[in-house]
Length: 600
Ligand code: FAD
Image (cartoon, rainbow, N blue to C red; front, side, top):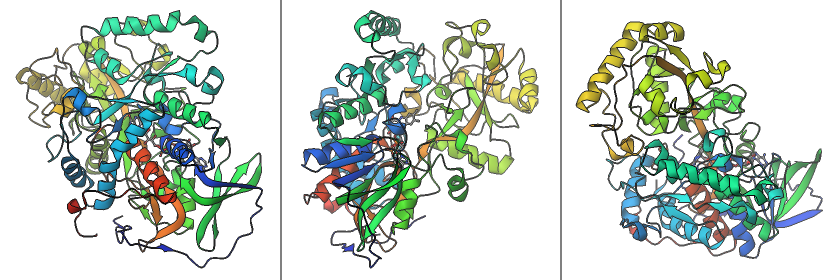
C-alpha cells in the first residue's frame, strides 16, 4: 500500500531494463495486443484501430464482455457534455477536489486530474462510435457532504442499444446479464425504469407494460434469439462496443488466456497466450494493453491481500475469469502493485444454482428493513454507499465476531411492496408461489421476531430491541444511531411515498423475514500502479516501455473510495483513451496543472 513514489510525473523516463532477450516465433504480429474484453479493453482496441493500429484482443473465457457485460453500465463522468441538457452545472475544479478528498492520498493528483479532464472526451467518443450515454440528474454522488460533490448528474446511463446491429449470432458471444437485471428472466431494464419501479412512481405500471409489450410483439427478433433485442446497462455498453469492434474487423481470440508477457531488451514486446491447447507468442510492435480485470476469483490472492474472512464465492463477478493473471504477469515484468487490500465492496447473497452471488445495491436502502449482527444489533447505515457497507461488516465482525454473515431483516409490509434479491414483492409473487427450496436457503420466515432470531442464530432480545428502535425512528423520521436517510444519496433509493423519511418504515408487522448477507464485491480495485497515461510503473516510479494497463487490472484512480456510480467503468475507458493517445505519440496534455499539488 501507499507506493506513490514518482508516479510518472512529466519527464519521467521509460526505463529500458537489461533483460535476457527472448526468442519469439514471429508467426503473429500486431501493433497492439489487448488482454481482456471488458469495457476498457474493447474501447482501447476500437480507439487504437481508429488511430490506424492493427489490434488483437485476447480473452480468456468463451464470452466477450467480462464483468462489464453484467454490470449496470453506469459511468461517472464529471462535467459531462449532457449536463447542460439536464440543467446541472459542474466544473473540473469541483470534481478534482472531490475525487482528491475521496482518494485519501492513495492516487496521485496527476492521475486524478487526467481522469476528470479526459472523462468527458471519452464519453463524447463513445457517442461517436454508437454507444451514447445520458446523464442521470437525480443520481447523487456517494459522499454528498464532501467538498465538490454534486447531488446528481455525473453518473451517466447508456442509452438502450438495439442488438439487431450486433446480430443474433454475435449476441450469443456476449456474456449475458444477471438474473437480477432482467424482468421475468427475459426482458432488459434500464436504470431509469428500475428506479421508477422501485420508487413506485405512478408511471411505473405503464413502464412495465411497455417493456413487456415491446418484447412480446418483437416476433422477428424472438424467432432468432431468446435474448431481448433491447440491450440496457452493461449489455448496452459492451454490446455497443462489441458491435464497433466487429465493424472495424478487429481480431478477437476467445478462450485464449494470457500466460505471460514477452520482455525483449527491457521493453514489453508481446504476449504468450494459451490457444487451442498450445502456447502461442504474439508480437506487439507498439504496446500491450492489460485490461484483464482484478483478482476477485483467485482465493489464494484474496487470502494474501484482502481483509479476512474472504471467499471467492462471495463476489458478484463471473466465475472463471478474473483470477489476477495479468496483475501477476505485469508484476513479473517489473510493475509495482498498489491498493491490493481494497475491493469494490458490496453486500451479496447466495441464490442456489446461480453461478455467482447477487449484489444488494439498492434494496437494503428501502424503508422497512434493517441489517443486524449476531447480537441482533444494527451496526451501519443500510442506505449508505455499498463499499462502506462492506467495510462496516468487516469492522463489526472484528469487534463482535458476528457480522460475517450479517442478516437483513424486514417485515410483511416491506415484503409486500419491494423486491429484494431474487424475491419479487409479495404483491406480485406471494410466499405461496415462491420456490419452496428458497425457504431456509435464500430467506427465513417466522411469525415473531423471537422465532426468526432462533432460526438464524441471532440474539432474540437484541433483534427485538433493534426493530422497536427502527419503528420509533420511522415515526420521527430520524435515525438517531446511523442517520439513515440523512442525505441525498441515501434518499435516491428510498420510497418517496413514505414520510417523513423515505428510508425508514416500522419493522413491526408479522410475518418477519431474514436474508443472509456476505461482505462481497463487484471486483477488486488493487493492481498495477499506472501513471496519467495508464503506463505501468515500476517500484521506482519509472514507466515500463510498451506496457499499459486499465480497469481493475490496475490500481484504481479513486483510491479506496467509490465517489459515484460508474467509478470503475468510467476510469477503465477513460484511461484506455489516454493510453492509446500516448502509444501513438499524441499524449493528451493536462490543462489545469495549477490544481496539482507537489509530487507525492
Ligand atoms: P472485466 O469487465 O471483468 O473484464 C476483464 C476480462 O478479462 C474478462 O472478460 C476476463 O475473462 C478477462 N481475462 C481475465 N484473465 C485473462 C487472461 N489471463 N487473458 C485474457 N483475458 C483475461 N461498475 C461501474 O462503473 N458502473 C456500474 O454500473 C457497475 N455495475 C455493476 C453491476 C454488477 C452486478 C457488477 C457485478 C459490477 C458492476 N460494476 C459497475 C463493476 C464493474 O462491472 C467492474 O468493475 C468492471 O466491469 C471491471 O472492468 P474490467 O475491464 O477491469 O474487467
